[in-house]
Amino acid sequence: MAIFVSEPGRPVGTRLPEIFRGRRVGDVTEMSESQRINTGHSDVTDAEYQQAGYSSSHQRALEEYGATASVEPREERSYLPVSTLCTPALYSLPAISTIAEALSTMDEHGVHHLVITAQDNVAGLIDLRWLLSWLHAHKANPESQSMTHIELPAFLTASPETDAHQLARLMLAHQLNAALVIDKKGQPTGVVTSTDYLKLYANAGRQQGSV
Image (cartoon, rainbow, N blue to C red; front, side):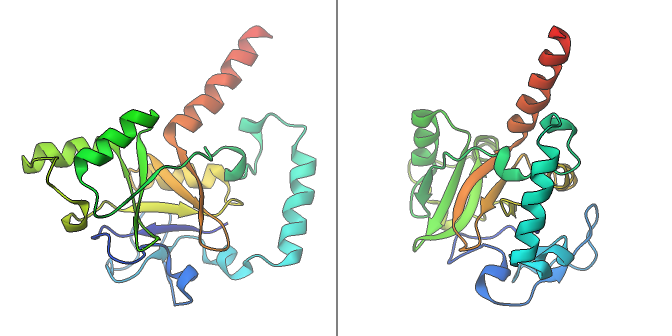
C-alpha cells in the first residue's frame, strides 16, 4: 500500500521509488517533510505497509476485506484500492522527445498526462498544466526544446493495493493532481487523477439524487 514521492529531476535513468531498485528508502509524514529533501532518492510515506510487501497473508487479507466491503458504495468504503479507480490507459514518450511532441501526443489521444521514459525506464510523469506553465516561464520554443534537458516535476507513485483515500490526502498535501500506479514488477499499470476522484463522487451524488 506504499505511496512514494519522487523528487523533481532530469529524466536520466529511472526515477521510480528506490524500493524497486533494491535500495534503502527514508520515511516522510503525510503532510509535512520530516527531513531535508534528498534529491538522490525517493521517499516512502507509509513504511509499515512497505515492510509488509506482497506477502500471501497480506494479499489474502485484502481479498477478504474487499469481499466484505463490496456491498458498500465505493466512495463510502473505508478501504478503496487504487486499482478500482485508476485509468489503465497510459501513453508515454521517450525523454528525447520535444515539448511540442508531448503536447501533440496529449492532443491526439485526448489525455492530460504522459509517462516519460529513459532507456525503457520510467523517468517522470508530466501533465498538460505543467507543460504550459513551463513554456510560459521559460519562453522556450516547444519545437526544439527536448525534455532531456528539463527538470521534470515531482510525481507520486502508488501500488494497485494503495488505499485511494490515503492517496487523495497525499495528492492534496503535495499539490499534485495525479499519481502513477506501479505493479510489484516496477511497471506502470495506470494513472489516477483528480478527475477520477471527481467522477467517483459525482456519480455518488447522482445516485443519491435519483433515490
